[in-house]
Length: 106
Image 1 (tube, rainbow, N blue to C red):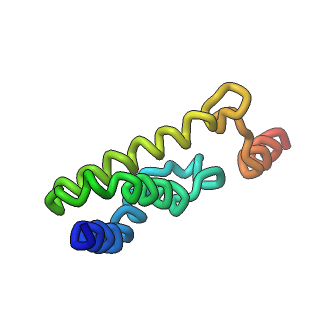
Image 2 (cartoon, rainbow, N blue to C red):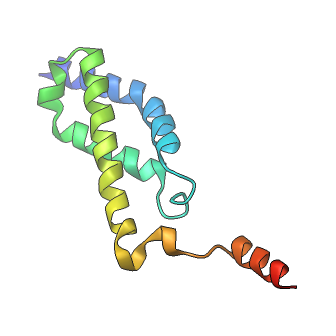
């Protein structure tokens, strides 16, 4: 069992930077102020740790595929409350947009 635990730990350490890069690329610019890529990656790594027995028997390719899938689901779960009607980030007015509209009025 200890060998499987070290296999999982090694894979998690190896894939952490890749997951971070993926998460940063997946978060749109409108959501960057509300979501942190590191939080999404941390949640994904926590889920992987909780599923270590299942992941220990996987090849590196299957392991990484599982992590990417979990990352995608975690990101979608994090975005859902931000797109709820009362919190919809698409309805926010940015200060730069507001300044531009005032300039057009002048």
